Length: 145
Image (tube, rainbow, N blue to C red; front, side, top):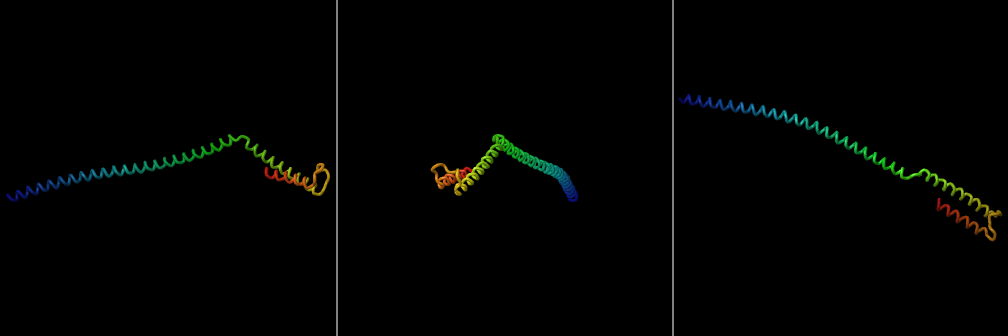
């Protein structure tokens, strides 16, 4: 009778161990399946993150291009809003050239007045007065130059 009880206890223990092994095998299989799904999800996540990084870079590049084009457009609009800039530059250069020529002529006249040549002094005007007048004109030209 003790033997039968021990045998029943052993069979019961064996059945319990067998059940636990089956549950463990099922849990292990489920864990492996979940691990496989997690790895697949991780892989997909890495792919999506890389794609997102590429899109972010492309967006950054496009924004940079847009900013550059807007800057260029602003420059072109500014040039378009300043008509005759080249004409103005030519006019200024012409004024400078004319002032230099006039200054040269005044210097020639000043030398001739100093040397006492006739025809440069008005009636009643001294050489010093004429030289002072020419110096004043030269200084005025220098200020405008």
